[in-house]
Length: 139
Image 1 (cartoon, rainbow, N blue to C red):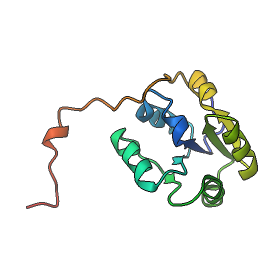
Image 2 (image 1 turned 45 degrees about the horizontal axis):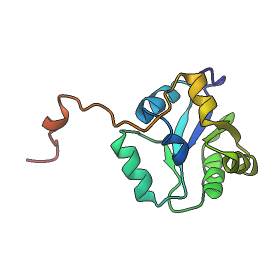
Image 3 (image 1 turned 45 degrees about the vertical axis):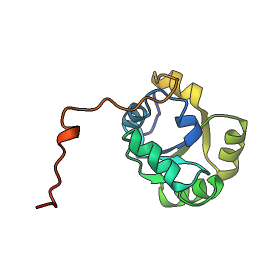
């Protein structure tokens, strides 16, 4: 996907992210052309956290315990980039982006442009070291 300027903040609606088969790869790819990448949702924080942990997504920001519009407005204030792009899944998301002053990109268009696979989210493959993880802070 040619995102133009690398000076961009990219926010995914959680529901849009759930339409992508490999959300971890999506975030890895998005970091190549975005300065900041995160998730916006009206769901409780633990729902977003559980999804991102399960899919090994490291986000630069998340919506926390507030509405999506307030979250987008706060992120735009905190992350001063040339562009702010909101990836969403429907007309309500497009209206939200416009209200909050963000560019809107439908998840299907983003997937096509970036060659991301749509489908039920798959957890990343376990690596051989996952079961042998040791803590540095434990005697």
